[in-house]
Amino acid sequence: MNPQPTIDSHIATVLLAGGVDFSSMLEFPDWTPRVFVYAGLCLFLLGLMAWLGSQGLQRRSWGRRMTLSGGGLFVVGTAWTAVLDLLTYVLG
Image (cartoon, helix red, strand yellow):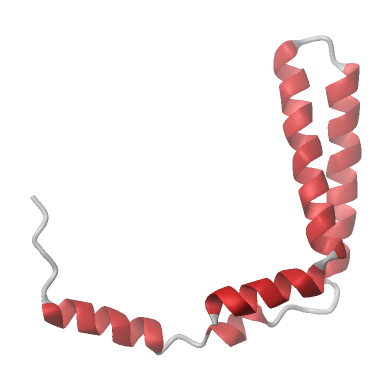
């Protein structure tokens, strides 16, 4: 049985969340988008080889997931400024 949160604990949570500086969390090094692009390309190519070259159903699905993950990382790396703008908007 969980106790109900009190007004004081709610105020403390709001104060703690309000005291966090989210903008400092969004400062990445200049090489970050390049890492996303290259990691995405490597995952994409390896996943594509595993997806199209394997005979087993389990390895084929594993390759498909790897291909889609690599494609996602590649898109994030190429659209890095848009991703940062979205994170800045969400974390406000």
